[in-house]
Length: 543
Image (cartoon, rainbow, N blue to C red; front, side, top):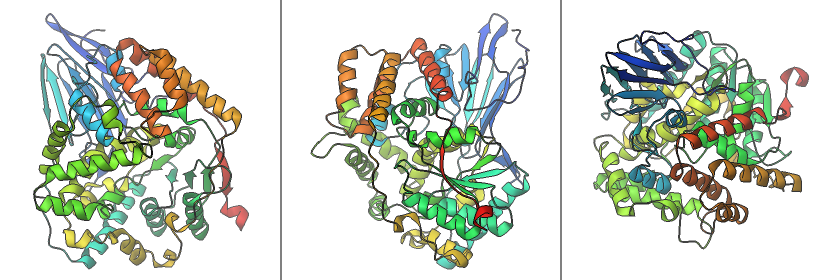
């Protein structure tokens, strides 16, 4: 294709449905440039914010005009656009596997992987592979005549002087302003994945207040026919408001979804397999999804925030890093085991990893809560962000009300005295929507009884797992097969499978394996169950 060629379409569906992930490769060839892939592409759903005068949301886009490549991501960098270059060539794609399938260097990044295995995420702009990075927040890339430039636009974070009462009002008003902008943008039908927590409920109540209710709410669960605590709380608020509510509760083997989630997240997350039913559901809908990402960490620090805040005040950023790593290992290892994923898979000593993470935390030393800022800009952006950019993006787009840059900056600059009791979001909901304050959240319901897997379900799980191992082609297939069947001696069953597959993929990665994983993920999507809805509340029938 000549150097001034244009792609046949400027937009592209991501995640792909039976298609190859989009990419662009440019290589200097004598006086010209050779070209492969899409010359122009927009991924995600840019949303113009008239209050800030910029496009926001979760998106990426690029354009090659024959002489210069420009690419950008949203102001917060929540869309993961991956970049590889070697001096003469540059490639970009939302899929690391596609870059490697097209020839990118797959050499593992030992330091980045040591962080991942000890914390379950990548930080800064790291990926599992040393030569592949992700664009930073507000990232802008230009490439011309072999010269690459990448800039970033970090948000200034300086503590504001604000009372608790004003903070509660700000949470209410800014959420409504963001939702109003979304509804006035005129998207198609809105579908709200609704949990039993605060973030998605706040979105539902805000839209109801504006007279712009979603067409339906959807909750996924994995415990069988009985509604679990999340589904019961979601059902309760939908019944109160008279909004259609569907529950995705059809059982399915998790093993195939693990491989698909690793592929969709470009091997950059150890979570999200449980969300594949929602991914498949949204792919068959005609509406855009709403995602409550960021509503938790931006309004209420987690249960360890007080001790982490005290460490930050002492300048003990290494202590914060160690505590996060210890918490991650404790959740994932088997009872009685002293080893977490870091001890099993990481290639660097823990102290080197601690120093690297501590350096990243220390960059937020001047913020009101350095731990909160680190968590938002790293874990929320680099791991949870895949829910918006990939898992929920299988529909007609995703809107994220809490990623309005006004809301983000407001919350990250609140004084610690305002946020420390972890009740800020609760107080905003109670004040903004007093008529529903009696509707319980998911943590108020007793958990449902765990469903027992049938023999046929167990056999499907084994078949899918062994199929994934065949695609990975490990050097010791019998040993890896035995570990999959018997479980990791150190890790709990499901995280053990996730980390086993992830480690085999990274250590064995080459162009052929990358393509096999893409092909297998596409095949699993095509064969995924069509029947997903197990329970429905229809207000028309209730009336």
